[in-house]
Length: 330
Image 1 (cartoon, rainbow, N blue to C red):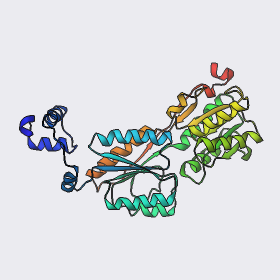
Image 2 (image 1 turned 90 degrees about the vertical axis):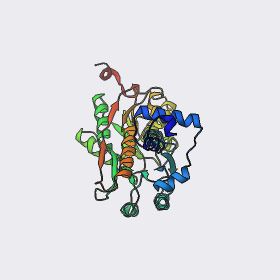
Image 3 (image 1 turned 45 degrees about the vertical axis):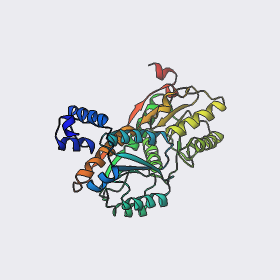
Image 4 (image 1 turned 60 degrees about the horizontal axis):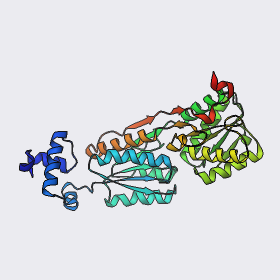
């Protein structure tokens, strides 16, 4: 094959094993592969390099648009380096997350990107014992020596509330997800802190906790909220909760944003296709996935380097669901 491609044996090996090579060399080797009908023996190669050429990505809910965006970014990065990506859903259950961490010790994947929604003492203890390359997307204690990529949820909540305040909203409600999760607790604290800083009422009648970060649970939470009060704005703990709230508002003949403005979090693809389009705070799902993948690939080659921690900053995308009256025209 090297002779046909007109390159060295070492260059052929680098291309076939997904290692860095120039575009010209890749093209020559791939052309020779096609001409010869060559198919690499993945099992033999894994024995040689002691790698499975598989990486894992574990999330609470594979149907959540945020995790889909992360998965796309991770897969783009890992595929370019010759790895397959295996995706697992833990349902947000601690026992399932722990079982997954244990199973990877068997070597079916060379490394893991984990995005847990619940981080309890058992998970923290297990993370300290992991022996394979691992990157956590989310918040973990600083003394857990793993590569870590996190969103600035507090900054995102602040952007959302400041925007609604600028639109003239003063009774801003919060439809949050489960507060025994990392994002739920972080966003609750940020909501209360920012509301107080803006001189708003963060009272209990303006806050409701959904059973999950889903449309179905969001509808239940929005019904509960609107049965007891009608705020002039609602912040959803994610886009799904915000969209569920918009559905309930429409069913009650409340106009968005004239009667009630709505803002979501995560800025998923759904935000641009709702009617009206949803203002949302992007927490960098794609960027978090991309950075996590690069950290994992680097960890595979540099097992002893110091853990890295990266925070991705939020960005507000203003759309029709929050542009209220004169404030929107100024």
